[in-house]
Image 1 (cartoon, rainbow over the protein chains, first blue to last red):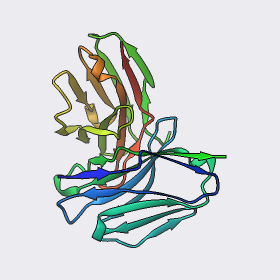
Image 2 (image 1 turned 90 degrees about the vertical axis):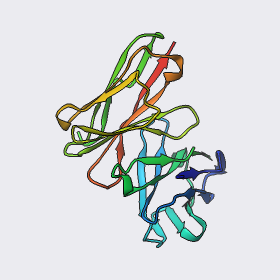
Image 3 (image 1 turned 60 degrees about the vertical axis):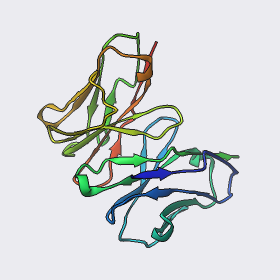
Image 4 (image 1 turned 45 degrees about the vertical axis):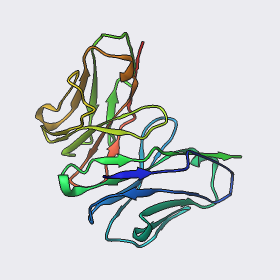
Length: 116
Length: 112
């Protein structure tokens, strides 16, 4: 069965600290997509990154970086030098194309609080 | 407007009443999704449209729920005879082909 686990319910850090948000997924398929979304208090889910199962290259975008490891079924997200504006709930999601819908299976989210 | 728009943003209704939500996807996005999010949880898939065709419904979508997407543009989600357990955030998302989905700000439903 498909499943996404975000074991960290809430993380608090002080501004400028680095923080890593964990994501572990389960799937039977060899072709799938992984995503990270940010949900600020306004409620809208903001797309951050998409990664397909055949591309294990790590990615860096500014202060954000992602570590995809198929061997451990993990897709972790690191924020370097965190800022107060990074405070939000972050969701990891899995999508499988075999059904044609590309619907998302979300984790339960990690609430990040960055303290000034 | 370049984003997904949802209306209303908030809805308070009495138990037993019917409610309808609207979603306007990004223009030319042929895929449209509805999700439901309860407090402290991730969004859960409800239903999927490709153009005007409703191609998948979750078992979460009881017979009190109905969704439409006439002409493959905007979509509506109706809940009949609302129950307190229906209180949640209802999120709409759209995407072109198999790319990432873009979400609206959601409609927060409170059933009293």
